[in-house]
Image (cartoon, rainbow, N blue to C red):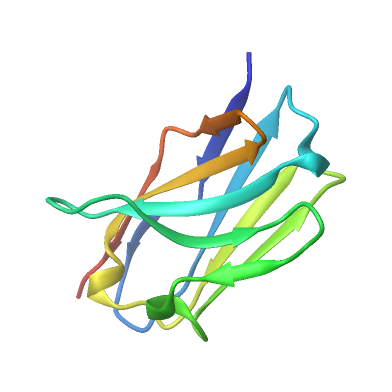
Length: 115
């Protein structure tokens, strides 16, 4: 059974940093595009950042210059470094792995930005 397990969420003050991690198991990690999505209360889930199997990267405009996505194929892990956090970044963050018709999701980790 494929598993994506997120970690690293929590409560942080505005301007602070968090680093999310997603550990994948039972997939050929290197062939998957890995992404982070988020969903705030009452809002639709949105793509935050994605890193392709070959390393191409794309961010949603609201996080450009503040968030950094990276992957470690040796450890089957994808990270999201979040700096200069804002209250509007508060959401549940989900890890996603996609390759062809295969599409897997983690359970999510809560990020709360508040003073």
